[in-house]
Amino acid sequence: MAREIFISYSRKDLEKVKSIKAEIEKVTGTECWMDLEGIESGSIQFPSVIVDSINSCGVFLFMLSLNSQSSKYALRELNYAMKKAEANTQKHVVIVNIDNCLMCDEFDFMYGLVDTISWNDISQHNKLIKDLTKWLEKKEGETSHVCQNVLSQKEIHSYGILLSLDGESKRVYNVIKRTDPLVVEKTIYCGAVGENQTATEIDVYQTDRCEDVVEIDDCIHLCKKELSWGFPLSKGTPFDLIFSRSSNGAVNVTVDCKNKRYTYNIIP
Image 1: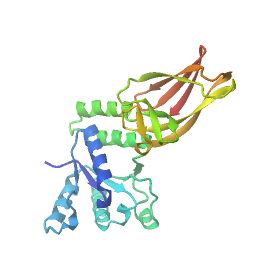
Image 2 (image 1 turned 30 degrees about the vertical axis):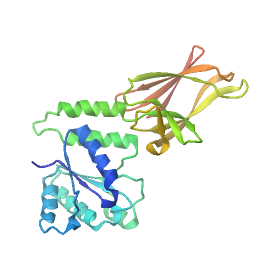
Image 3 (image 1 turned 120 degrees about the vertical axis):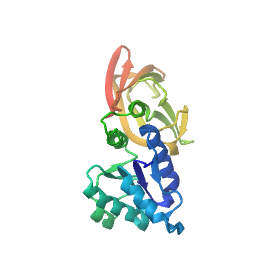
Image 4 (image 1 turned 90 degrees about the vertical axis):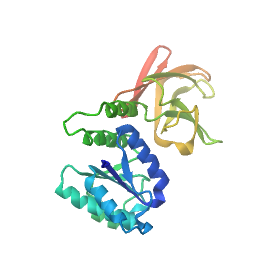
């Protein structure tokens, strides 16, 4: 049976791409095809397997990295997929940047106009998941209920919000976990010396881990936000942060302090 998603990549990125493949398969309910043996293995029949797989797939994903830009086999696959997509508007070719690399001049010249997303950007990440689900709809127009349910779960629980970087151990504290409900309330305490703290800064990280404390290498820094309540508080004064998530992945945080509330958007 044909696999609807073909993944093209550099063998040097194998472990990272296997992780991406596993997530896409879990979210879409569709098995991906990728070369785990290597076309350079010397098999006479192997090029025909690659060609047949690209011909039969509905979606071709090129995993862009510093390595794949110089991989002659991956670039051959991309060139062939683009030719097939020109003749078949139902075949989708997407370049997925997996290591935040810049395109070299030659790659930019050849493929700069191809639809490109960053896997590490949460909004682009979620958009690709939505697009894949839409493209993989059944021919009769009925979307797989499994795909819909998993996609909804992915958008709601795809990251944690992490605060309070521990400078010595380089760990972050997980405030919202993937398994948490849509609204999460956390009580924290002013840490300023004296009675002049009117705001606090938070660093927002993305993670797919559910532990209370996560190593910083397992996180992606999204942004830094200042949350203000407008009047001075002494050290140790408690206040609540109420995080809420919408179905499209947006995250708001409300500062609840002495019966006053201030709401901030931290992930659009």
